Length: 123
Image (cartoon, rainbow, N blue to C red; front, side, top):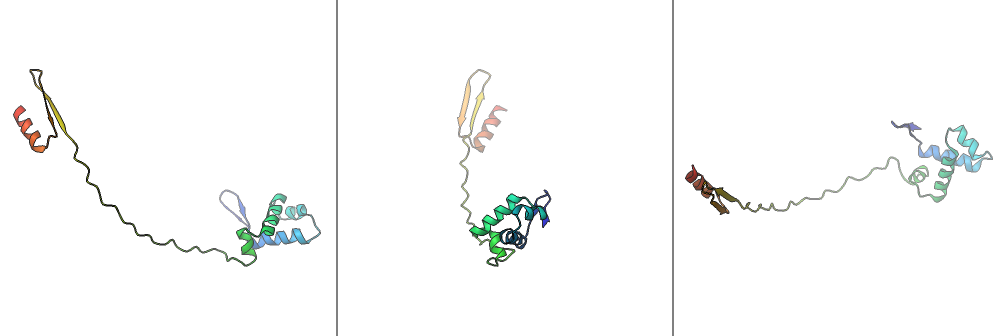
């Protein structure tokens, strides 16, 4: 039996199978067997059901049908093909200059050269 950081107990498959064997083959009650081993009676009944179904991993391990620990194969390498980078569309720049006379001059799609020319004319 192991106890994790949260205080939960884990039991080996062989230990569980031993408890199930005691509960199903002896004349003693399941409750008595559970109390002797400091486990809940409902837990023993659950293990008995799992053995009857034979689908739980711990049952297959205890019966020698599955080795413990189960070694999983490493994940297969999948190549990553990056999609081509899309060039962002140039931002449409719009400059509005309000003159002292109250008139407004708006220049749409102003590039660097137009902005320099406009600023040099204003300064």
